[in-house]
Structures are given as C-alpha cells and as structure tokens.
Length: 115
Length: 116
Image 1 (cartoon, chains in turn blue, orange):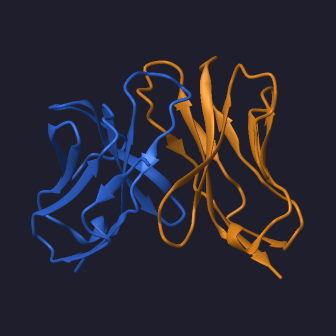
Image 2 (tube, chains in turn yellow, red):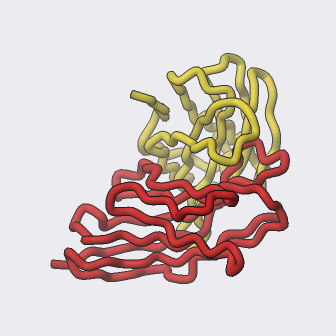
C-alpha cells in the first residue's frame, strides 16, 4: 500500500524559531509537494520538487524553503516562524512526468501552531 | 492561470439520499484533469474520482459519479445513497495540461454533513 508519512501530526513552535517539517514517501515517486491548508482558502501550493535537489516555487513560497537530498524525503523549512504560518501543512507525492491523470498521494498533515 | 470555484461552503443531506457538490473551473488549456478528494476529520486527503478533459463518458467510482459539462466548465460530484461516513470536507481540484508537473490547483472545499 502506498504511504506518505509526515513526521508530526501536531507541532507547537515559538515565533522566530526555525521549523522543519519532514515528509517521507515509500512509492519511489519523483514528484513531491508541500501544500498549506487554511479554512476558506483550500489548499495552496508552497513548493514542489520533481527530482532530487530540484525544486520549484509554488503559489505562496514566501517565508518557506525546501530541501530534497534523497528521493524519498522532502523537507519544508520555516526559517523564522511567524504567527501567520500557523496552519495545516500537507505533503504529497506523485509519479514523474506531466500527465494530467496522475493523482497525488497525501500524508495525514501536520497542524503547526506558532505562538 | 487555473482557478477552481466551489460555491457551497457547507451542505447537509439526509442519510440514503443523493447529494451534488458543485465545482466550476477556469482554464485555457485543452487538456486537463479534474479530481475530487475527500478529507475526513483525520486530515488525510483521499482520492475519490478523476475525469479527463477528453473523456466522453462521465467518470464513476462506486457511489461517486462526476457530472462533467465541458462547455459550462463544471465538474460536479454526485454522491448517491449518502452514508454517515461520507461526512467530510470535499475538494475539487485540477491539473493543467501544459507544463503542469502534476501540480493540483484546489478549490476552497465543501463541508458535507450527513444526517440521520
């Protein structure tokens, strides 16, 4: 069975802290994604990666960076956490390529609270 | 740019009845894919159904069907014989056809509650 695992379900951090959100997939997928989910706004793409060490900005990359040193792992980094980054963060993966029928597989999400 | 619109923030339905969740989209691409995902309170996004822009038949998956009207740019989800376990948030999403890299664009979601 396919699996996307996010390291934490709930996380509480203080303003200004550096925060790492980790995501691991076991499906040998090339594409990996980080989304942010807020009530009334749906899911918005922060960053995605289509290969190791490759990354591309999504719709809302400000305040975030990413790292993909190994194919199975994609990390989201908040360099200096702020209260407006309190949100649910969802990681996803998909097979390589550009096909319109390629569904994404999601992790269970990390609810991050920045105090 | 692609845009997905879901105009129903919340919906109620009686158990065993059918319900339609609305979704309209905007794209200039000829080739694109449309998806519906379910998100229960546990948080995980569960894939429900897919419709390709060139598919002539409406997609069906068990109790789920997608009412695809290309000229109107709508892709409504129909759930037949609703069950209590269908209570969840439902998202409509799209992958564009040109250089999309499988990036899904999501709507704002519809919270469905199934009542006895």
